[in-house]
Image 1 (cartoon, one colour):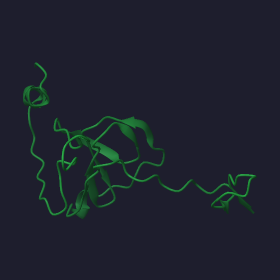
Image 2 (cartoon, helix red, strand yellow):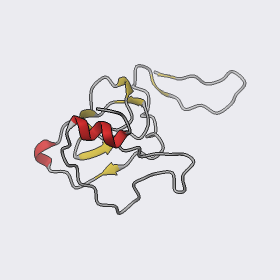
Image 3 (cartoon, one colour):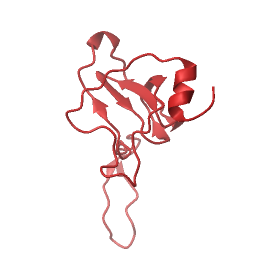
Length: 121
């Protein structure tokens, strides 16, 4: 059996099998998908996404790494955090990272994290 929220007015709808999971939501603006991660640390997405992932959270899903540019729901496994703002809608371009950039994660102290974020340690 199929179900779905098809409007009675006959507008567009997309039926799916009853009980089927909702299709994944598109990533937030500026979400960088980073390839090249070692398969040794690959991990699946969470079975139940978190309601809010803070901006700057670094996550793994499968063999990709990503950094949440804004606070948003998400299902990636969170492994760290960056103080950098990756998405600023008033900038041109609005995303700090662009296709082809090489990204290297380096450990920093809590003091350096707060300094880079503009907060006092």
